[in-house]
Image (cartoon, rainbow, N blue to C red):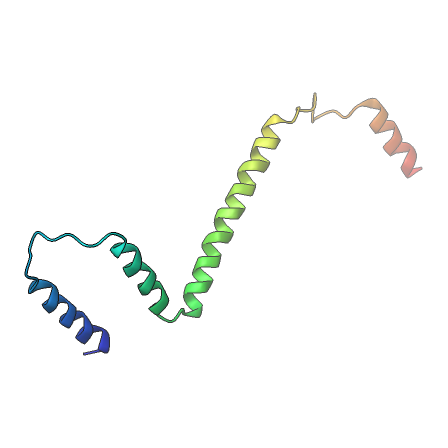
Length: 97
């Protein structure tokens, strides 16, 4: 067994042999436990960092896509995409001459 399992079993044994079954934890106990667990924390693997950054990137790109989609919907539509205006057609023909 790992050292964590040994310590966990010792703590479970002490908790079960508590003299007062109705006793409440002191104020701030949960915060201290969480803070201590964060300090001890496991080693961060490179794969976990990549996955975290990938999720952040995907959510960021989705937000950008939503914003750009909203801007596209708000932009005015051209009158006709099939036939360009006469000025454009003439200027394109004159440019090629």
